[in-house]
Image (cartoon, rainbow, N blue to C red; front, top):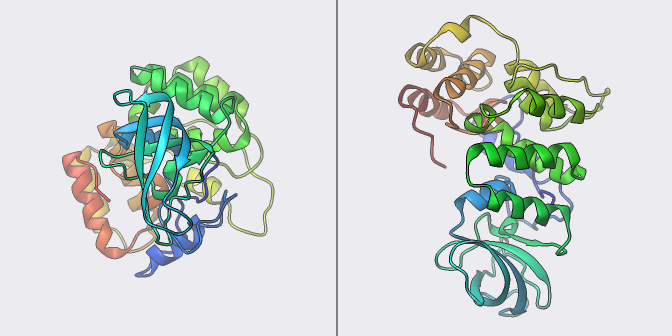
Length: 304
């Protein structure tokens, strides 16, 4: 269940920021490349929220190698949606093909017509006893924000590195869940942090907690840099949504630390995700800043 892409953009934004971002997505935390397919990374927790059906399945039949059509899935356990004995899932013959393989056990995230949410990331082959599946089962059973936060904290504190990073990446972009972290949970997150560049740094920064310094690197420390940007308190903390939106409107195009901090504060003020911090936190194209300012004013998320 490890991600095949990261969700951080290059620091300097430009009209080609989307192309640069896609390149980064395909190189960080990527155990299985997706050929020429480019998409923003979505964690299994986000896919669970969006999907109409989530189930553990055994793949019984596929359209055939590189063929479009419907795959037949035998349901082993339903995590979301009405229980069914079998499901049909759509396979494509594009570069974003899902990759269904007959005989394999997998977790699938499906829409009402069998389309896979997250494209290839909506089909995750995993053993029945894998930590990733156990975490998703617990997440599915959680019936309120506080319970879901407990699942995510357990995954970050106790899970293998890939699961820790997925859970932290999801939590970092959810101000509405960060508000439910009590002191014991914060202490567990602090204890889980280690000296490597990781999504947990963003969680700690948005909670205004100390962030460890990763060791020197020949490349960029994306998460550590973004955490260092949003953690410090400043005069923006005293502004309301309208004034923060004005700051976002009046900033410089591309990468503007003050604009980024203002958007972060606005999300905290509204107590909800308006746009993933991991997307706007390293700069966005000039035409996108007005959309973020509008989201800050209204409290309505920017849609992809």
